[in-house]
Image 1 (cartoon, one colour):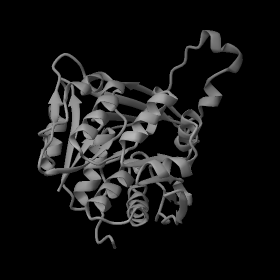
Image 2 (image 1 turned 60 degrees about the vertical axis):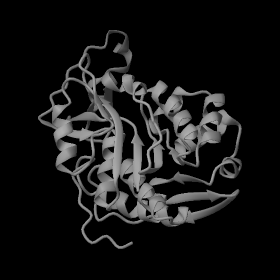
Image 3 (image 1 turned 90 degrees about the vertical axis):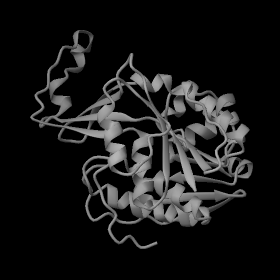
Length: 298
């Protein structure tokens, strides 16, 4: 069974500023802001939700099919996916733009300034979902706005059950649009902040949303997860990380585990439990695709 993962492929450029932003930015001079930060540490990671989710699912033994669009600088990412044994059948290359890129600068207090260039991600809607005998499951993760809307409709038309996990893309949609996503989806997953926004914009409580789908999961970070099915809530406890190094990509690691569990026919609570385990492993490694699972108990 293969899982179609709709989302972004991106390059993450991470820079470390050894001081504090607050000491460099004068509040009374914001109207003429002109600052420069020395960043002695810099690294570039493979990222993007589709890539990160596919990495997690592959480590668990699943068959991920990322559906995403790379730019004219994306050849290295294609090579990366193939070296991991991840299919690039649904990865399209756009020759007239760059691959999506996030440039993240972090200060000594873990405050962040991020610039995100969507690039080729804005063309993701040009790749359509068609019926395929091997594809039994899918996910809508953060992507171009048009792609998220159209791919949800296409999943529904093809009869492929899918997870709606809008992540940081949720603010792009109004209440009517979010309600349409929920009504088309089979499962919905959000973090606690996104969950509050989802309920406010749709006017539906978590219990009501869970009655419209097969299940809703609200991830709470170090506090575990709320799993809602049929209007009833179950708490899934957290898994303590051996150390906290880098949270980048933890949500995507969790999503990959969710897909793996759904492929196995597990209950949503058991899927969330595995997600918490994988997230705790990922947070102890730097970068979204540099961790290994070892002998993970399941």
